Length: 557
Image (cartoon, rainbow, N blue to C red; front, side, top):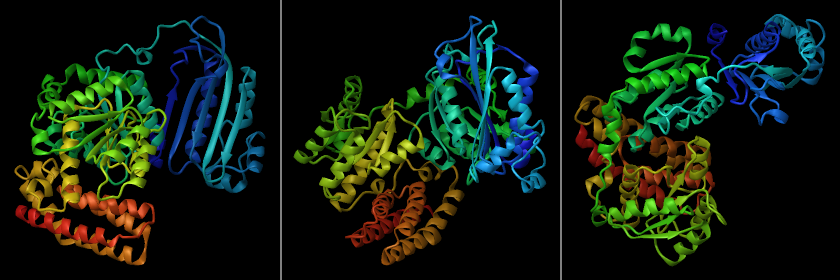
């Protein structure tokens, strides 16, 4: 089946809940026939997307592990993102060797064993069979069987006792949301700390801003930047030379790129990924990985105890957890700052009315008023020129959670547990931008170009590449996007403005043009709200920030 899904360029995924016993007593041949028929049909009728197998116990007995030979009901579903069916087509499925309609039969062929026979076999095993489907979206075939757990030693991959990988920070990159959720769930079962994204560019941006990971798992087949390219880009980053990388690939693709994959990746796993294989691979990697890599983070955590002298900021911490409060305050005080602390969003909004803050570290989950709502209130009540930079502190690593923070108006986010180095970099990054844009005064070179940007780390080691990137940005990309932004504003085209500002922001961030990035963020917010009032001053500010960046960037040419 792995070969079939590779030929069609779709994903075959599966997840077995931890409360499902490793072995059951039942008719292996019949269960295998039913499952293979459903999976083969799913592959046959799916041209893009996935076929997903899920195994669980029914809710009435899933709260216990059936190792005592008691009866249980097992629930198995096979979902696909294929052509789907209407009610009339579904009603014909359970007639012997029937298919949705004649046109489907001509295009896809028959359904093998036949769903009528599958349904009958399920009934013989004391179960039931059901179908859910929607035309153009896909189908879900589910069946239950009456069975018993067989005595057996528990599988290690279902056991949380894996101290060698506990609390390891793992970066997960996969454009398939279902597979990403499966990987997150599996890593959490082993008490790892997963951080997930669906695109390579965001993964690179996390690492460039200082996020630290012990392992990265990358999917091969992704749009824009595939896993192989992402692995290559990560290896180019000086800090990531020894980061262990695992590639999830198909059989055929691995054979094509075997030499390159072996150079870049610590291991590869063919899909569909078995949970036991994934665990063994991860454990083996940490058994052999160089100790120097794990010592790197400790060497990097050096607190700048004079940061407040060089970058004076008024900081507010909004956090309801006392332990997290103490930790954050201790770090910031070590840097020389005096911190105001509040316990909820209501107090955060009230504090902003009494005091002008430069930066707020805002916990997302708080009682009475959460961080998202508090941010909206602060934005509503304070003018943009005096508004503090709001940094979300969240334990959620999924992109949807981060997007929610940014949509609420937050400027950036850090994942919990917060790393000392990352908090320091956030202050340097946003504190500099805040004072520059609000003060509107002459700035130093380090304020115009972010010294932590990728171009700075590559200037000495890859000067030719830096020149190429700079030429591309100054001669083509930036002028083009500036023109598009002006035209979109003239036409009051919110969608066009959002796209052009976002694109310019991405290229500017890569080259460290932080002033341009900040104004682009403000333009994006305007576009999202379809607010074109008083927007001309942002265009003027954008041109000023671009000119400042241009004067610094031409020094690389």
